[in-house]
Length: 209
Image (cartoon, rainbow, N blue to C red; front, side):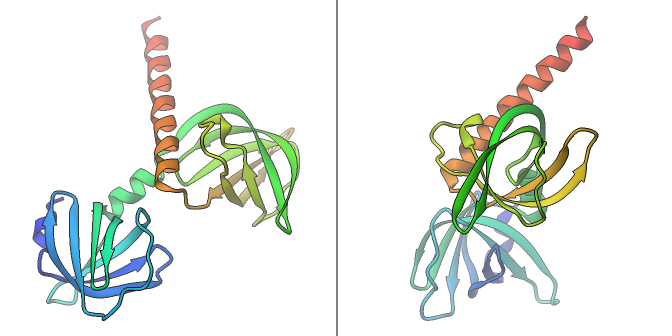
């Protein structure tokens, strides 16, 4: 995507939960970086490294949605990096790898952890995981996933159970992850690519036999 085409266009920045950040215009573009000058006197507090939506408008009333990561901000200016289209962002977020990994989760009630509960992760993305376990969980159940299956440096991985389906001898659930810090996301992304490489090599080995 040639981001330079958007230079000078009016835009609106929002947090990923659609909370407004600022109205302004795209002042400068270089590679995947974009600088937005605001029309408000003061920006609300935003965290560097978090993702934001960029709604870019044209003179016909049309608009396009991009996603970028906040790199730096001043009272009336905000710089984003890693700016991509919404389609590309969703593709990256929902890139999923099939696995068969033992792991542990803890149920969360009133800020207390209960468990551990053994599970098997069957597929995983940056956004969610599909897992099986013998214990019954409820919709919107808050859980903490032991993250040691992909990193010993990440301390916490929180998620919310969004779907469940009964299997023959267990239950299968989908849990959506809470937003990760940038470095935690990079750790998980590296793990996913490594697992994808293992899967490709395994399939190639099967075909060569």
